[in-house]
Length: 384
Image (cartoon, rainbow, N blue to C red; front, side, top):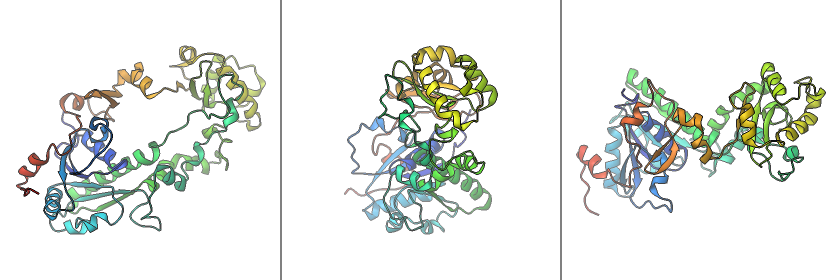
């Protein structure tokens, strides 16, 4: 079965974080992704660790050299989609602005991904995911009340239980927003004959990824301060708890039937503090009881009792444990390439993972495809 984006040509200007992830997603779906990297690029990390470059072709160019700029231009002119994650104005200074391709490649979809966006008072400011998520409001409800598990003898009250980590909503979320945007613009360009600029920002995407939080807020289910609502650890039946062996588990028994199932399996049905699921006044005491209950068994013992039931339960696994979990292995959630374990492409298309069987996900060495790509386009670079 052919990959969905077979035949789509993408050029990506190498950068950090979300833009390379967007290029990886397109490559995972079958697009030919040519990665233009700095010829003098150096990193202290092994190349095979940069899994967001898997399946791409690497072309090394010196973008301070006019001849190399022209080579980059030719690659773009023969591409369907461009991805770049520089600060606003960098591509313009290189002479590679969207406007410069309007005649030579009118169907070009020009995808731009920055922290704060191409416009606005913060457009030129530096930042990282915590900054973008903070301004978007999407980090607020990631907090937890540290004392919630203080009663557990193996958990320090100074250590908060695990919550959503960085890179999920901001970096990778904005990469997904960029991918959805450029693919929508690509479809439009095929019909209209005219490409367009796609302006994606980590801050915008962080806000967009928090849409369900806004739904809950507008429904009155989120208190102004974190730690007092059910989605942010305020309720006893939706939180992360420490276990006897110092590990963690999660429960989120939101629906009444799941809540009743949870109480029955924990032998808490007759405890009056759990009589009314939505009685917020009883939540603090109920959380203490729940914390003590989960602290009475190891994580493996809770897995044996609760995993696979309808109480909405899962153990909190490390990356290494997640790669070995039977469910993830059965689904092919992770794969190994060149000795490096990494998340496998998703979603799956058609019958199974045919692309994973028929295509290479190797990480290219810096500039390994330079001569081949340039020769196919009739480009010759003089020796520098």
